[in-house]
Image (cartoon, rainbow, N blue to C red; front, top):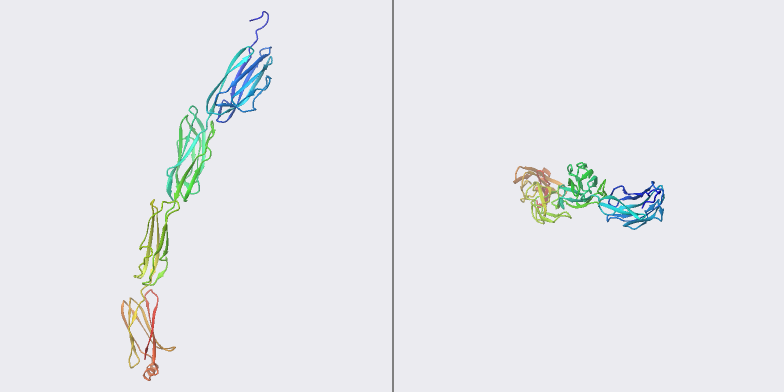
Length: 429
């Protein structure tokens, strides 16, 4: 009711605001009630109890006021104040609000002014960060093989787009980028072939959508490998989670070949047994076959002179293969036989030597430490070689006079390209 001669009181204006009006999840904004009584000469009583929406909470101890009255009271979900605003002045009641749940949140408040009320309202957007997951195209990969590593980035906000989306990833030792990465997230993607880094910057994701960054990776080392990204982030939603993915890189099986020994020369007909084994990579599924030119423990072929190879191949159950080859030589056959020599009245002796192939034959007769007679021949093929040795004149005379009782004989055969073999015997003169 108006009193004659007295001007009507002007109701203060009350403005509620969040600054900033959009925050990342768990980010903070200043909630302010600005009370303007600059147009009135009267004091006004002010009170309100703001029950904040579900997604917004007051940071304890952050409330304050420039109005007259007790400090504002606050719980995690409300802000209350009772006091006055002086004439011809303005004052504020404020607190720090935290975005506790993603969404668009309206905060309507009814403020009691004297015996009436003034309604005010403000809203705040709380934006969730992007989330990321990582996956390899397979869980098992052979050494030097390739697979795909894919990062899927999701915008969980039903109403807000995300910009400035970024993430980086350093591959574990044993993996390298094998091709230029692909990208459906916009922005730019980094990842040079041969390097171990891939990353996204300045990506954009519409509301309730996802995108992907993929790169081919090659295995350069073996073992159980784990890839982990940095935290994904965006301009509006802040920092999100990390992502990890596991991959086991399996090496090829291995062959251990102990016999025959590579580079070694074996005697013709020598008994040499194969000695080998096969093993799969520690992370592999096991050996499916391990086979050599002969079975492990069996005799290898030394019946042919010349260069030979012995091969062992291992195969794992996942198709991995390893082959080892030993290059060895079998010396030419130097085995020979000698027919008994016959001493003739003139002191000469005839010998028949049967040889296995071409080579040189020598026969030396001696009496004590003295050489009695010497002869040599060349065999052009396998067969008999005949040599007739005649002693020197002094030797013949010694035989005829009966001074020589026994003659020692050394017969040697050196096969072409082979090693010398000897036989020794003696006979009565």
